[in-house]
Image (cartoon, rainbow over all chains, first blue to last red; front, top):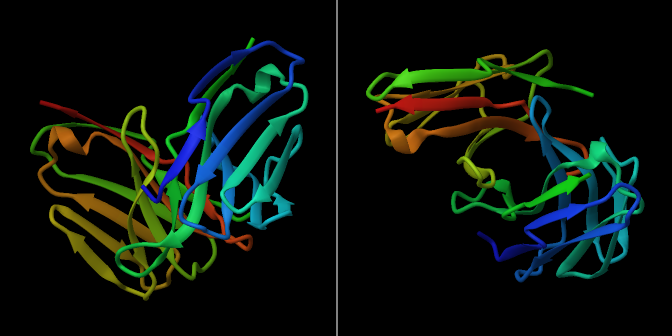
Length: 115
Length: 110
C-alpha cells in the first residue's frame, strides 16, 4: 500500500519516557499525516506535514511533536509519554487512488502502550 | 469541529444477510469517502462519492450519496465472513486530512 512502513510496530514504555515513532514512505508524496485510533473516538488527526520542514497541528496535538527533515520520513515524538497516549498510531499519505480520486493510504500502524 | 455521525456502532449479522451503515452530517459535504479496516489492520480506501445522489457499486457493495450531500450509506448484499471489519466514512478536512466517523463494526456469523 503506497510503500508506507511504520516502526516500531509495537512498543511498551513507561510514563514519562520519550518515544519516537517513525513513518517512512518510498513514493515521494508531499503530504503525510499522523492519526491516533482509540475505541469510541475513531481516527483523529495529530499532526500533518505538507513538505520538508513544513508541519502543522491537528485536532489532538497536545503532548506530541513532529519533524520532517526528509520527504520520505515523518517522525512523531511523545516528549513525555502518558497513559492517555496509549493508542494505535497510523501514518498516512495523501495520494491518488486507482480511480483517480484524492485519497489517503495508511501505514500498518504502531501499537503503543504506556504503563 | 464538524462531525459525521455513523450508525449503527455495531452490527452482528448471519452470513448471507444484508448490512447497511449510515453516515450523517449536519452540513453539506463536498465529498465522502468510505474505508474498510479489517481486525488488526489499517484503513483501506474503498470509494469516493462526489455528486449529489450518486450511487456506485463494487460487486456486493453499494454506496450512495444523498441528494442534499449530507448523508451517505454503504450497503452490503449477502454478507460473507470476509466482510468482517470496521467501516468508516470520512470527508476531506481543511488540512488535506480526512475527518472520520467513528465507524461501524461488522461481525458476520457463519
